[in-house]
Length: 386
Image (tube, rainbow, N blue to C red; front, side, top):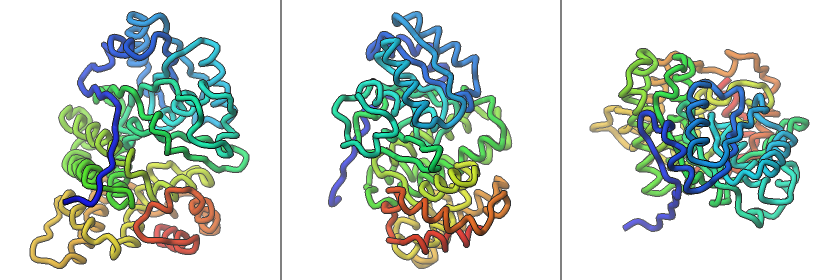
């Protein structure tokens, strides 16, 4: 008998080849004037975007493309996009891109319905009074499951800090359209980064204090799919079955962490990216083995499950030995993919680590780790990863 299971996922998921070609026939059920939000840094397949816009125009009264944002938006850019949504009378937001686009779309959907500026959300009573516009997500690549999440963020460029809102279930996407072939243009390095991020987020979901049997089952299946298919798709980008499996791993990962939330890897990677500019996915994968070692003794039973999902041989060994195998299994995957293993491989100074630890500590997801820690322990993890 399980002690408790709280789980919700209200989105409609459409996972198939050419899913976006008929997107308008589904989206018309929730909106008639669709704001298409596309951040330029994440628009890797312009042809697919044109297909989506054409389908929406066929089935709705209007599809308005907003692509004025170059990269991760600051608060002022979110305000501008929300004002644009109001002016064009959009009644739904379609996000075409990856994690930054999805978080921005949820912020815009919320701001467009409430009289508040993005920079003031941190000081506002959440959830905001009025429900957001419906959000539709279309990932251009496996996006660590953020296409499934209700998470939104507001970035303060002056302070290099990010506010995360994660407690408004109204921000779950209404619809998710996944066509694995949309990401066929990705390079081997991009696929490796995306896949290792899915693995990292799945492990974090399992280690979460809010995890349960439902979220763990999804996260473990995501790990299995990554273990069996990521190296294949990196070495053979034309392998359609492997590409579909990695895309499904992203969805399952997102359906898990949408309820269990992120943890320490996400928090430290966010702070590292904000201060140094290191790619977020890369930072997460570098940090994961060291964070797993930190939490090993408090979550050994979960590590045994992770080791099995990683296809590690854990017969006739102790629980702790099997838990260690989980950490070793993650390292094996990363080594086979030849992804970076150390922060020192990048232009990061050791003197930056205390500031990164300070910034990571104030991100709320640090409290979602199974073992309590303070700033000094975060810095110790960073030193180990350096």
